[in-house]
Amino acid sequence: MSYEEIEFQRECEVVQIPQGTTVIIPKGTPGVITQALGDTYTLQLPTLGGLYRVSDADADAIGKEPSAAAEASPEAGDGTLSEEQVWTALKNVYDPEIPVNIVDLGLVYDMQLQPLPSGESKVEVKMTLTAPGCGMGPAIAMDAQHRIEGLPGVEEADVQVVWDPPWGPEMISAEGKQRLGIED
Image (cartoon, rainbow, N blue to C red; front, side, top):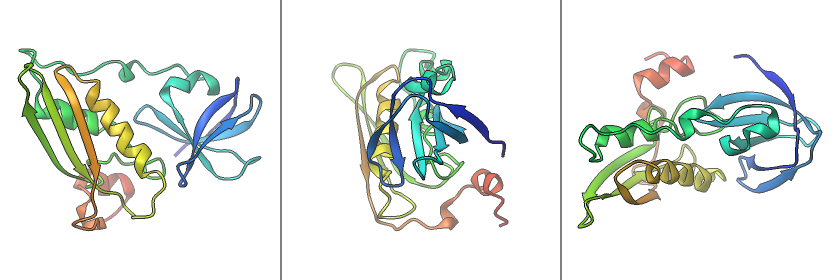
């Protein structure tokens, strides 16, 4: 893993990890990008202590270009929403402390599409977290909801955090285990 030193080029709202609280980082604050996945950045800020998450919308604050992937969404051939589109969107959601998406981490327990009278769909997702006390839980769930809502054909998205069954490392996919260096 390579780290990149940065300096905030403008004042920026970030989310503190793992507390999930929002703080304002002043212009000129130095930091190190420790992870850049799923259109978000995880930074270590030595002068403030700890880790912080910067959204793609604020990428310019750390000298990065907002990702084109943030606006791009897979289209279904006939204009209808597919399960594959939703799973692809969810694979772009990351826990800011773990370099594996929430699908490959085994955090998504259920995903249902419900057709609505409008011709669009309601998407319901049940997901969990690696630890019940994770302060980033609401931010991760909101990221998932926003990505689903951005898909063509979605009228409504409901992402619920559930605790049954409890998550365990055995739920990580083979791809996720490989990424984490875990042997089966």
